[in-house]
Length: 241
Image (cartoon, rainbow, N blue to C red; front, side, top):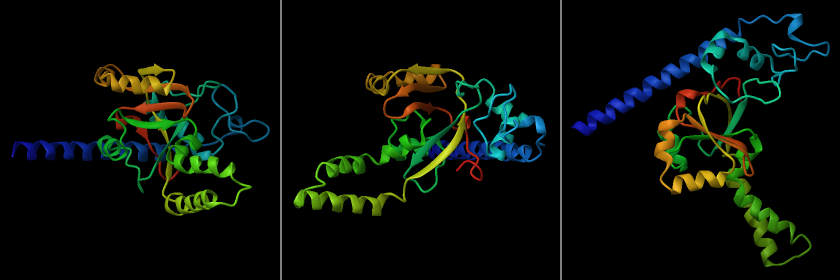
């Protein structure tokens, strides 16, 4: 009975957390629609500008408006996930085989995708997140290229593997774009450092001391970000596709 009550409390807490975060997203969208664009917000060529006058990374009108809202600024305050050139909030990418990415449910995502329960992973490069799921296909293509002039059983098998992979998986990989908030990150240089950290049993201490992990210029994923708390993920489904 005690376990059932505990599970029920966790479910209720998760549902409340989801509602709160969704409310935050809707509030930001509502506020964005109230932002008025003036001539000083664009340069002579029509590019949206940042507050310091540089060209914005966001030339989509609604993206740009989101960054101008007080509600977004309040939510994002203190985050170090910024573009280096003009210090705008950076959007990052997450790919998944799940039909719907429940970014608000940390447990669901970590358990379903085997992320060692550290958190939810994002990359600064959209293609890198997709390639994570396409390694099998990429390996086949590498072998395929080496056999282009050969007509043999291995060539035919690779061609069959490629066609089957595309048929079964290509349309299943979904990619989502999000703003994330990390104020106190553990900074790593390589993905291998993350693997060693997990294998050594040090993840528990990291979760207690930091609110995320940033791996700079990781060879596999460009800049890689791991968010521990789903409240620090802001998905705007109708905009960030």
